[in-house]
Amino acid sequence: MFLVMLPYSCLIYHVQMLFTREFLEARENENLAPYSAKSTNSQGRDYKEAEDPYRTCFQRDRDRVIHCKAFRRLKGKAQVFVAHYGDHYRSRLTHTMEVAQLSRDLARTLGLNEDLAETIALAHDLGHTPFGHAGQDTMDQLMKEYGQGFEHNEQSRRVVELLEEKTPDYRGLNLTFEVRDGLIKHRTSFDQPVSLDVHMPSLEAQIVNIADEIAYLNHDIDDGLRSGILKIDSLNGLSLWKRVRAAVDQHLPSPFFISAAISCLIGLMIHNLAENTHHLIEAADVNQLGSVYKHPKPLAVFSDDFKRECSELKDFLYEHFYRSGGVADYNIKGQNAIRFLFKKLMTNFQLLPEKIRQNPYGEKDYILVKDYIAGMTDQFALDLYDKFKIKL
Image (cartoon, rainbow, N blue to C red; front, side):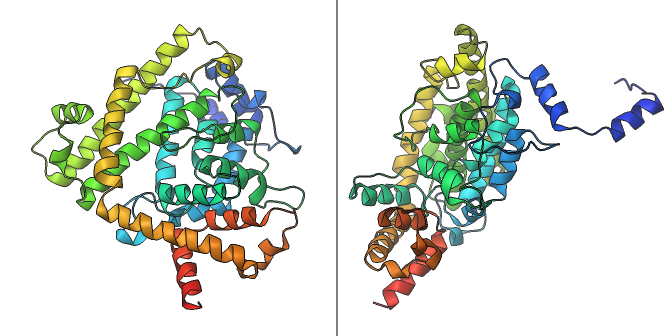
């Protein structure tokens, strides 16, 4: 190991140097891949604002997301397990943080914009209902009675564009186009927004899509094993798990084996995604962001063989975890609460908070009720359900 001694004057220069927005933007332009989404090339915001002296536009968006009310409410929204099931299971907030971490790492590996990827990841679940995907499905059914539908990615965009309040000058958080575009085009096996795609999203948005799947597949196995709903031996027939067993010490005590196995599985997924994405970018001769937008298919994807192995894992989780008694019972309880609250509020509009009833933008009643319920935490929804039931 070699130590390079810098002159004292050079050390003082580095200590005193301020990393201004212009410096960060220049560093992006110099270091990021040519097909990345760079701050200086952003298509901007709907409402003009003065630039921040020390933060790029995507860093500023990230901070706005973290400080908004919808982000704070994620701590009380279930991922799979209800919050009081145990202290160590994932909530919608911890899931979001894991997606953000994976997205940053993948962006760094591929030479993409870490700040944009992180921001999309942090915002991707802001519009999620209480009670996980069961809650989303129920809200979708209710909205179809009004000729509409519900998809939480579209609701996430609605949150940042319309529902959050930052200033009286405009609605929403006034985020950049690239963040909002990444939200509306967020796709996983659970999430299929209906809005038309006129172009592919950025690679930063594409890796968030896959990071979301990597996060939930792995933490659901982790939570399932630690809860006892899943048994380790039941995973042995899965192709991906066979690779994990071959790489991890089988003699480790159970908690340590689970940790090592999940780490190994995440590593397998990250490696395949990074290698395959790099291969597809080179094969398609993508050399600028415009080429990403115009490409007919996503470029940030698993290889075909690996995708089939992941599908096998998803099918297993559907059958043995998501439909298990402990999970299904809570889902049914949550779905019943959402149905009851929706119909109760639609027929008793005075029960909505006064601020919502004022309806300054002339929204349909069912839209106001949908927005209100979708923003609730699990416990708030259950408490309101109990309160209304008692008063019947």
